[in-house]
Amino acid sequence: MTKPQKAIIIGAGPAGLAAALRLQQYNHISSVVYEIRPKPTTLGGAIGIPSNGLRLLHRLGLYDNIRLRAAETSNLVLHAIKGDVIGKADLTSWSRDKTGFGYLRIQRTSLMDVFYDAARLADIPIHFGKRLVGIVENSDGVTATFDDNTSDTADFLLGCDGIHSAVRKLYVDPNMTPEYSGVVNIFSLLETIMLPQARLSLDGLNATLTTDGLLALCPCTATNEMIYWFFSRQLSMPPGGGGRDGWEEKGKQEVENLKVTLLELLKDTSGEWGDMWKAIINQTNVVKFYPIFRMVLGGQWARGRCLILGDAAHAMQPHASQGVSMALEDVFLLSKLLEIPGRSLEEVYAVYEQKRRPRTDRMSKMAERNGNVRKKTGPWQLWLQECAISGMMSVYNLCRLDRLGIGQKELAYDVEEEEV
Ligand SMILES: Cc1cc2nc3c(=O)[nH]c(=O)nc-3n(C[C@H](O)[C@H](O)[C@H](O)COP(=O)(O)OP(=O)(O)OC[C@H]3O[C@@H](n4cnc5c(N)ncnc54)[C@H](O)[C@@H]3O)c2cc1C
Image (tube, rainbow, N blue to C red; front, side):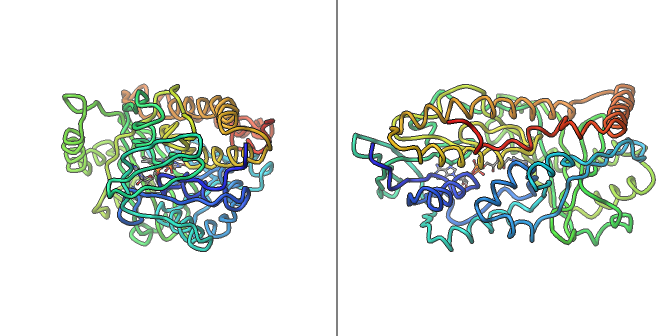
C-alpha cells in the first residue's frame, strides 16, 4: 500500500485535534478537520487528566502549556458526612515515578485553547459549521459530504465526533448506540476567593459521600483561583425514555431544587468542610446538568477507510477521569501503526482494534464501578461505607501498597510500548 498522505478528521474535540497534530508531527500526514459547531465551544467544567494522558500530551508538545493553566490534583482527601477527614491518598505516588507526570485538573475551555493554539501554529485547517451528511469510498479514497453541499476527499477518515458520532451512525456502525449510565453530573466553576479561609488548606480533590451521591471539589487553575465542584448522583430516566425534552425538563427540576437538596444532604456536616459547602451552595449561581451516557461495549470501530476514535468509539463514564486520556492513547497507537511499512489500512485498523479494545473495555468497566459509589444509600450504609473506605485507605497508606503500584498501574500504561 502507498503511504496515506491526507486524512479527513470529523470533530475538533480532544481526539480530533490530537489526531491532526500527531499525524502531522510523526507521520507527515496532513489533515483537514471538520467541526459541526459554528465556533470553538465546550461543555464547560473541568477535566482531570492522570499520568497516562499527561505523558502523551507531553509527547504532543502540549504539556507545558497545559501545566501553566492547570492545578496539580494528585491528592485525594475524603471527608465523612459529618465533616472530619477519613482518608487521604496520593493517587499518583507510584505512577508519577514511572511516568514523570502526576494528575492535573484543567478547565475544559483552557484545555481546548491549548489544542486550538497548537493546531493554529501547525497550520492545520479547521472548518467550523460543517455537518456531515454522507461518506462514500472507492479504491482511490474516501469522500465526506457536508450539508452545505461541499465535500472533501482523502486517503482515510477519522470519526472523532464524540458520543453521538455521525461517522458511526452514517457509516461505520449504525447499530452501535449510547446508553444512559443511570448517573447525572451537576457541576459548576467558582472563584476561590468566594470561599471561607479554609480554602487555603484545600489540596487536590476533596470529596464526601452522601446518602444521595458524591460531592467533590478541586482547584482547576495553576494558581488555584478557580474551583470546579460537582455533585454526581443516581437519577432515573425521564418518563418515556428520555428524549431531549424529557432530559431538559428533568435537568430544570434538578437545578431548581439543587440548593435545597444539597443543604438537606449536608445538614449534619460541620466544621470547615461544612462551612465550605454552605459557602459554595450560596455563592453558586449557574450550574450545568449533564446526564451521563456511555457507549455499550462491542460494536464495530472501522469500516473500509474509516475509523472512529475517542468517545465516538468508547465513550465511558467520567468517573475514572480517562476519557481524554483514552482518546490520546487511540491517536498514538494509530499513529504508530501507520508507520509500519507495507500494511493496508484494513490491516492497520484490525491490529489497532485488537490492541485497543481490551484496554478501553477495562477502563470503561472501571469507570462504571467508580460510578456505583454515587448510588443512593441509607444513613447506616453510608456510615459503613465510610468505615470501610477509611479502613482501606489506612491499610493502603500504612502498608505503602502504592509502592507495588496497586491502584495506579493503569495510570503508568504506555500505549507506545504495545507490541505491534
Ligand atoms: C460531565 C463530564 C465530565 C467529564 N470529566 C472528565 C474528566 O475529568 N477527565 C476526562 O478525561 N474525561 C472526562 N469526561 C469525558 C471527556 O469529556 C471525553 O471523553 C472527551 O471529551 C472525548 O473527546 P472526543 O474528542 O472523543 O469527543 P468530544 O469531546 O465530544 O468532541 C467531539 C467533537 O466533535 C464535534 N462533533 C460532533 N458531531 C459532529 C459532526 N456530526 N460533525 C462534525 N463535528 C462533530 C463536537 O462538536 C466536538 O467538538 C467528562 C465528560 C463529562 C460529560
